[in-house]
Length: 350
Image 1: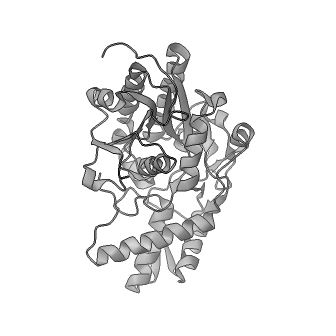
Image 2: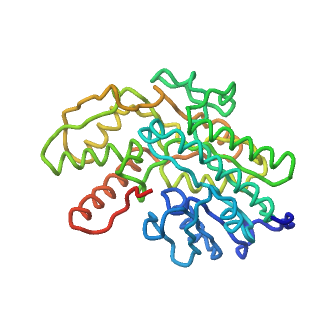
Image 3: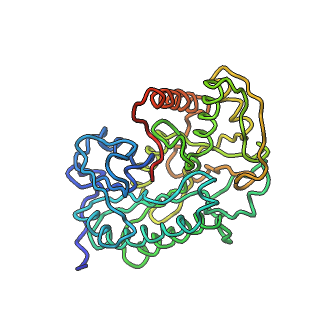
C-alpha cells in the first residue's frame, strides 16, 4: 500500500482539500455531503456501495463512486488524496434489521478497519467514525424510565449483539490509530437520527419514519388502526438530521475531542406511544392500536446525557421533536403519494 503521506491542513480551513464521505448514498451521509457543499467546499468525494441510481440524494458537483468498502482496495481508492474522511458506511437499519441480521451488522467492522488504515496511509488530517448508542451497556437500558447515558457508560462493555459490538470495537480502532500512529480521529455516538430523505419503508426504517408511514397508510386506506412493536412503553430520544450533520462538523474540528467518543443526540425523551400520538396529531387522525409483543423492540429505554457535549462545545442538538417529526411526516406523505402516482421515491434498496 505504500507509505503514509505527510498530513497537512485539514479541509475545515482549506476549501481546496478533498473531503471523503462514505455511506454517502444513504440518509446521513447524503445529508453530510450536501451540508459541506452548501458551506462552500467543492472537492467532495462521495462513496457508497449502492448503485448511483439508488442513492437517497446526490449533490451535483460531488464526485460519486459506487464501491463496496468492505474490500481493502476500494478503501485505498476512496481515500486517495483525502484531507478529511467521514466514515458513515455501515450495514444497518432500524431495530427490525439490527436484531435479525447481526452477521451483516458485524461485517461492517471490515469497512472501518480498512478505511482507518487507508486514511492513515493517505495522510488524512482527520478521520471521523459514526458510532451508535447501541454501543452502550444494555444492562443500563432495561427500564423505560431511562437514565441518560453518559459516555463512560459504555464500560463495562455489554453492547447490543451484532451492531453494538461492531461499533464499540471500531471506536477502539480509532482511538489506537491516534495513540499509536498519530492520526486524529473523532467518534460520535448517534442517538436515533431521523428526518426527510431517510429510509421510510422496506424494513430498515427507524421508529419515527415507520410510525409516520403507518399513520399515513392507515389514513389513506381508511383502515384506522396501527400495529406497534412491543407494548409502546419503550422510550428513546430522537435527533433531527440537521442537528446531526452540524454536530458531526463541530465534533470533527474540536481538538479536545480527538479520539474521545461523545454522545450526539437529543436529550428529549419520548415513548413509542407518545410518538404514535404525535404522528396522529400531525396527520389529523386517531387510530386503534394493536401491540405485537413478539416483534423486535430493542432495549426498554435509552436517552442521551448531553452534559459532556454542552461542556466541550457549548451546544447540543436542539430541534424540538414535534417540529422535526412534522417535517418528516409531510415529506414521507409526499413520498407515499408520489409512489402511488408511479413516480420514483426514496426507499431502502440495499
